[in-house]
Image (cartoon, rainbow, N blue to C red; front, side):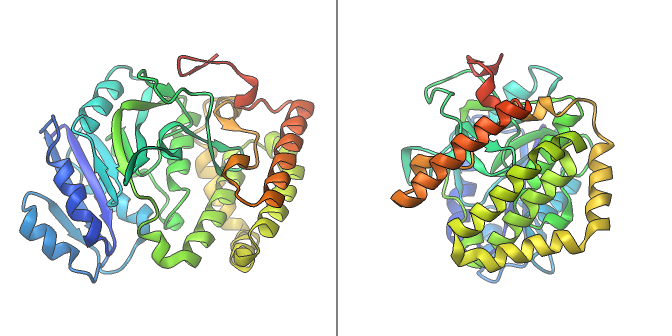
Length: 352
């Protein structure tokens, strides 16, 4: 039995995969196996891996099962005490693996750990996956409260699927129906509802291009992003939290559609799926809630009341809209008693 199983899902990623695997095999830790889960690539990815990296175990799927099911297939075959997910458009630091392993072994309450991410082509670029957070509607925002130069592990909602490590407990992490996007939130929050915690490990570094595969299927990406984040909202929170968030949900959906009109029809399709599949949503909710050991407060303190990060919006008119929405949402949370991360102190990467 090996210590770690590194699972790399792949779909037509040959142009990135070679650099990714080369960096993995340069780790300062060697007790690991690498499992490539190929989702029916047509670009020669499998042939390249067989030739250049014969130690890699390859699972060839008959069709593109997506990220969620692809990772589940890899986890099911993993022999390691821990499993790691790594995006194929990534290059990892030599201590990437051993630093995650050190932290996850340090405390039985830590269920999962994630890495600090930099832009693959510019090591100084500071991106979400490193010190990131999420809004209570599971949109990505940056957590500026955490210093960029911090070296100690940081409490956060849960690691992203781009680079994460979990103990191999025999349970498949994701819901196959998610296909791509939101599946890491699903699993991370489920673990938190069970009473576990997560750490971001700033000394475990990876360089990530991001959306290298999904940008090839942009419409599908938008659809699953929107559908899955609202699916997560509906299955994760308690009825009382959902009741208090309902007015902001309506504002959020309307604002998102108008903010990005080019993808409005795709997002509407996502909302229609949820509306027309109530029994499926209820089934997923019951499964998630059966894991609950803690209250929503343990989730909400790791998310932001913001709509979006205003400084990431280039258009002046849209920036003003985002600023206004951020102020409205934070004020609303204060009024109805929803305590998000803005209402806590962060000291040395820990919520107080």
